[in-house]
Length: 159
Image 1 (cartoon, rainbow, N blue to C red):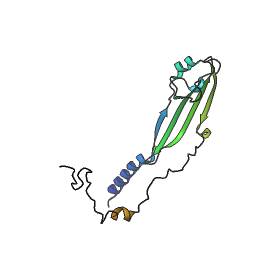
Image 2 (cartoon, rainbow, N blue to C red; image 1 turned 60 degrees about the vertical axis):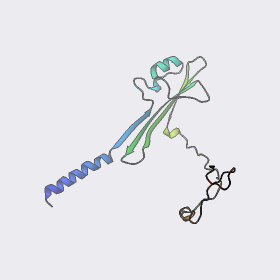
Image 3 (spheres, one colour; image 1 turned 120 degrees about the vertical axis):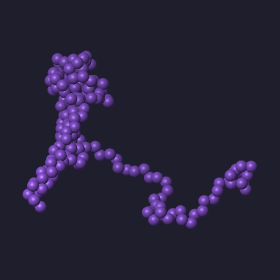
Image 4 (cartoon, one colour; image 1 turned 180 degrees about the vertical axis):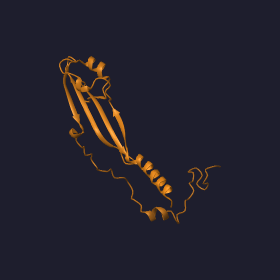
């Protein structure tokens, strides 16, 4: 092979693999514009001022209507691999009964906990068939036509 062909092949190989090496970032959830949730000050801001500065929360607490949460997640994906969470922040803002900010709590992905779900399975009726039973299970079985109760000798049920 000549040197220009080898150089062109190497250049083409480098260009095609650079797309696989670079990561793609995806942003999910709350994206702060001008004011960050960390700029909210307890005792000074109210529910309406938080709504005006930050907008609607990502979610509200299920058990307490006085807690708003702003959740931001950044995922990175390399080539064809599954995306991994590189950054996750949760800002919980608690309000008093007078709608004044009581406290601002900040959590990141290190503060999260893995929840183990019950891995029990509900049993089903019947038995499990093996591969050969599924393939050859109906060999030799003859399906009988259904009969009508009014005309037992006539399988179609027509008179």
